[in-house]
Image (tube, rainbow, N blue to C red):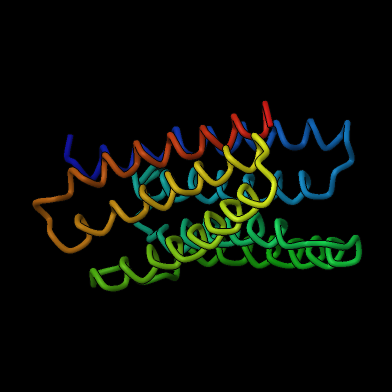
Length: 209
């Protein structure tokens, strides 16, 4: 089994963990009716769905020969973005606007997924780097936001959140060497393992925070 295949299969637990976070958030939302939890649940569902679909496409399940990286990047970027934006919301009206935009983006995600057969294969390492850099920027902003929230009010939840996003940013940055040097592709497996830890930390944050 090649390193690229192993790295792709490492995305499976990431998708499953994100799904568990989404289910957990939906469950708590039903009890608390917290809009922030609803945003999180939808965000994590988006990350989970895009990861699992892209993994299946990349593994050529069902004989597919499509490029699932755009779909994967869209789901992870928008999911992380809405988690970040929800931490900035201060009023109920802002939260309602955020939820409306999230519904719109969810519709766009469906279109992005349906267009998968038409995406050209990625042949340039800089394309992969650009998609990965978007994740680093978005998740980096979330890390900084929760770090500031923790310094302002030292809660267990904000601590777990900023640590989770720090680990996730590290995981995405570890992808970079393998994008430009084929001999360092094994680092991609390590990067996936780090992201598994990061998403697991998010699950812990919303379970005990």
